[in-house]
Amino acid sequence: MNSSLLVAVVAIGIAAVFGVEAAGYPLEARRLPALMAWIVVGLSVLMIIEDGFKRRRLRRLTADAGTKATSEPVERIASIVWSALIPFSAAIAAYIALIPIAGYLITTPVFLGGVLLVSRAIRPVTAIIVAIVVTAAIWVIFIWLLRLPIPLLPMSS
Image 1 (cartoon, one colour):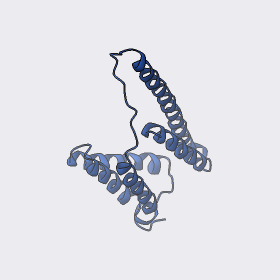
Image 2 (tube, one colour):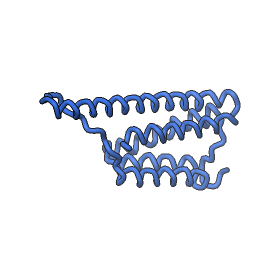
Image 3 (tube, rainbow, N blue to C red):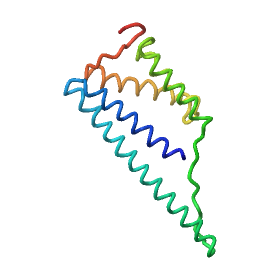
Image 4 (cartoon, rainbow, N blue to C red):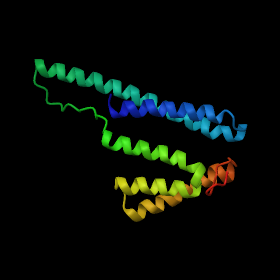
């Protein structure tokens, strides 16, 4: 199994869980999670279709390479990088487990900032700013506007 196929299947599973969980919300609060779940499922299905096209093209190119010389480069399908997937999955599990204990306002910026700092995707100062801005944006949408009961600070259930 390659990485894009695994991500697509996991994303569909997560979207299904969020869709089921959102079914218990009031109608106004249910709209955004349901919309997001459908968008994630749609994009995931497109990823699976794209993966199928890539596999078919790769098979055709390798079969043609045996019969004639081809100048078209063969694109390899990315494999799963387990050394990145396992720690990131553990971090997600820790994030989910820590929200009820440490609260959203502590756990979310630490998780986002930590992932961005460890991955070295962006500069450290930018990672901290992104973590704070994303935490604030999520707070505005889900807590202030939708009034979802999310524990904000330690032991504030």
